[in-house]
Length: 181
Image 1 (cartoon, rainbow, N blue to C red):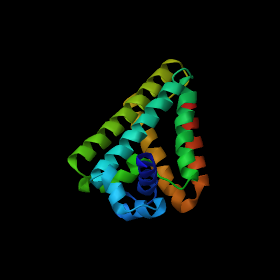
Image 2 (cartoon, rainbow, N blue to C red):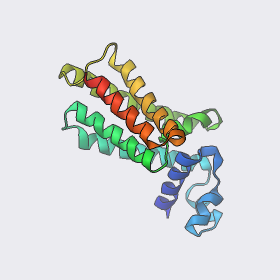
Image 3 (cartoon, rainbow, N blue to C red):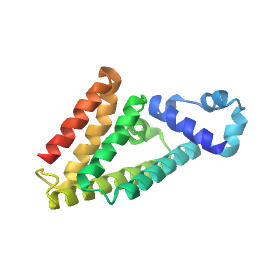
Image 4 (cartoon, helix red, strand yellow):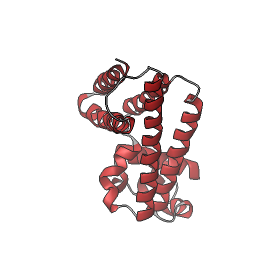
């Protein structure tokens, strides 16, 4: 039951936003009472922390699977993760939590910061190594480029909600092409 709650909360955060859903939005589809959700997650912040932790575990697992690939293929895989979210009607978790950031508890804010830092650190290392191996070509610091890559991927999911998934595909394709040329 706990895993089902976290999975549904993750979907609700990505579609509606953290502050836009209640435990009733979780309890009803799972055919349980609100008290069952509270049993596993006494506060909504506890649930939010569990969702972020689960996302970070998925990210770390993916990174481990990708590490033997050339850096350009690793970045392709990251774009594919965002593409899957796009076609599922989701935005990225960090992008969905950012608008609510100031209303979240300090421990949740800290967890979001940890997630952001881990993702930026990985993309930075991927870009640095890819440039070293002549797979990527870009001006400036890899850390600055990583911020551009991540912000482009996040915003492309939002734009795709308005303009359709083709917008994401165009942005993702151009982003990767610019790094390779």
